[in-house]
Image (cartoon, rainbow, N blue to C red; front, side, top):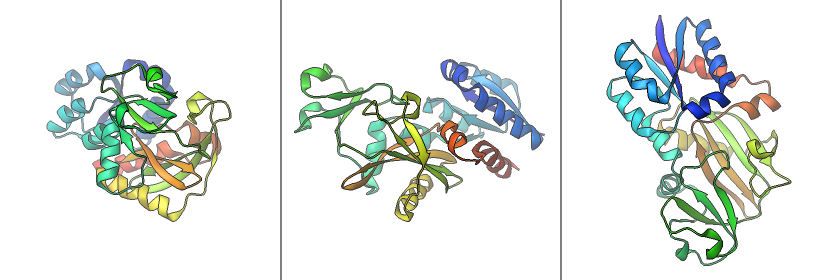
Length: 259
């Protein structure tokens, strides 16, 4: 029997019990043992137990590097986790590969006009994202934040990419906040993504050799921009508006990969 672990930080684990249990149930159907471990327990457990793979749902890419050095397959890999969880690295990756993206600055003095969106490089779920109208409102001089010009938009489109295929597209739009995140009250609905958007999402997945990610596009009057890459990507929106069992499909991909 193949055996693996699913890893979350202590804080995120409490919010994602259903995801963990669903992964364990689907693994059991494939005769795969899947044990939950908190991030801080991971290496010690791997050193003492046989582990064939890791479903890594935390945000410490250096831990993935350590796991992969032991020859253990991680879903997702080091490059995906490192790139997606630093918004500056995400922007640099998008720019280097000529994907349409918003100009992004590490130094607020480089930006010529307001309002701006100020984002923590390591934030997720819409946390640590602020709309500012002048430099004084930023009240920040370190390199933990990036700055992008604010553009009114018609929603935030997430393409779910599994095994380098687009599984579904969801539009998130908020009537109460400039942020469209589902976790912050954004409404969600299915979206018919263009073939061009799908091709971009697939190319991003291939360049990162990612297993399961979200690729977020910002819709504007001038078209769309790739906004962020999400790893670990959730599943709640998909289960709310579709009958797609993305976790089942994810575990099937893992089973095929490790067999």
